[in-house]
Every structure is written in structure tokens, then in C-alpha cells.
Length: 186
Image (cartoon, helix red, strand yellow):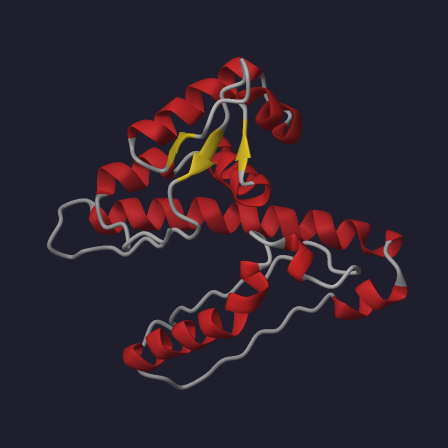
């Protein structure tokens, strides 16, 4: 259920909204959810969540799941979204930059929230909370290879989202973030 990289600036801009990114995260976590369930998770109104879910559907990011009685749940159309600017498509680079900045802001906000609560966690989770930053010398092709290697390394852990019974009983949701960019503009 993975999707080819998104290069269309219209689709990228449709995704570039804080609530839409939150809704995508909720659906990634729960598999499927109604607008009411999403609203309870993100602290927004049901009407707002419903509107943004319909917008996400319009651009192919979510779709209706099987109805549960009167409930109308939604699910993601792909388990992972990758955006790549296409130099041949006007506006693609600007849209990818805008979406990337918004997503990074959301990741940093969530990481800050987690760090603010770390003193409430058991010692083993405090010790497992890490921030690593490395400056490397690499070519563009090598960074692409590194990203693919990291995806392969993480794949068994990501797969547990769809089969939580495969995880150890003590497993919890954790965020792993990788960002690769030029360090000095060279």
C-alpha cells in the first residue's frame, strides 16, 4: 500500500496544512477512524476534521473505509508518503519546501512535547530517548542509499503497526525521525 513519490505541487499543497498532517498521523496510528474519533484525538471540531478528511480524499491521500453501522471511518491510501520535488514541474520545489517545513515544524513540536514529559517515564524509556546528529561527507546518491538502508532497518518495526501482536508486550509507539540535508550549502 505504498505510493510512488508525490511530485505534483497541487497534491503537496493540499497536504500542507497542520490539521491534515495530524489527521494523517491519527490514521497511521489507528488504521482507520471516523471524523469524530479524529476530532477527539486532535482537539478540533468534528466538522473541521470532516472537512479536512474530505479534502485529503479529494487529493487521494485517504479513502472511506468499510462502514461500521452508521459510522463512516476513513483510512490512508498509502502507509508512507514521500514527496520529491520535480524540477520539470513548475511549482514542485516550492510546494515540497512548504510541506517539508510544515512537517518538520510538527515533528519538532511533538518531540518537544515528548521531551517535556520524559521525567514522567520509567528509567528505561528515559535512557532510550536519544537525539543523534551526525555531519557526514556523502554524495547525493549516497544519501539516497542511506535513506533506503534506514528504511530497510526500520521496516520490521513499522510493520508492527499493522500487527501489534507481533511486538513484545512492553513495546510502545516511538517516533524515529531522519532528516538529510546539506549542512553548509556546498
